[in-house]
Length: 373
Image (cartoon, rainbow, N blue to C red; front, side, top):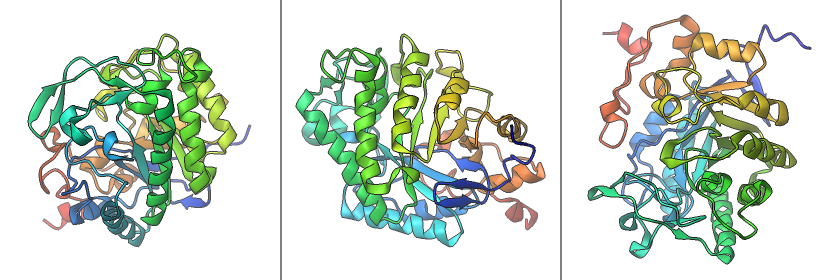
């Protein structure tokens, strides 16, 4: 076995065609600050550029179609105006020497008619609803029971992902990540708690993985496999998710994804506290990432409450190739430097996570800014 002593958060890594400056990944985080028409703003470009010292940035979830919208003011990748907005983001990140992937997203049932074209019902694999309330432009509203997709409709959603991948290419991104985690549409197909179908997309594990395979195949036609990643949350219970056998389901998915020569598999699992409350609170329990790591042949990105010590440990132990950070990166634009120097971290202001203005978005100070005060 090769020596892993030099595998730290601060060592470079070859990800597909790109040499990353470090192994610190900025995880995707919804911020609800897109402008009219779900277009990224100048503030979005500033926000991502501030964090360009990451080895890789993965954007917030970016819907592939109007049907894919689940929250107010989230950016899209389905209009020319959105492409122009994202181009400002990618140019700003590249000017800072960074790399950035767009996370492509369809929320499925995690939506509301007021957010859907024509007030339609949200769609899902099966008419299985979620308990609780969803944020809308009119405030909190109860979730509704979604409409089950007809078999012949599913190919159209696959085509939406492919079209969004082409727009991401036009916007200047370095690659794309498919959002298969946290209870959104791809995840809804994968898990039997939300997928009760009896056609070729439901029932057996291979059938439930089929939609993920078809979307991945479509997107890799645009990008090639080595500039595409997939994010999953095998034991996550967020958005009402559950599976009767997560290890079997996601082991099969990892095997299936090997056929596409992907850049990475990004796995969300709880390992600590303080980074993303979704990881620690909403979990079925039991980590299966070591199993998936052994199966998947591409790079492996770990996520779930890591800090400098635990991040370096999982890299040195071979449990991952890269580590992604959520709210700690949100609150610390210069997070890689702070981790390297052991510097104190700005505390995240949870009241400003979703929506609002520059406060809690682009005004977190860097170490240099603090020293200049």
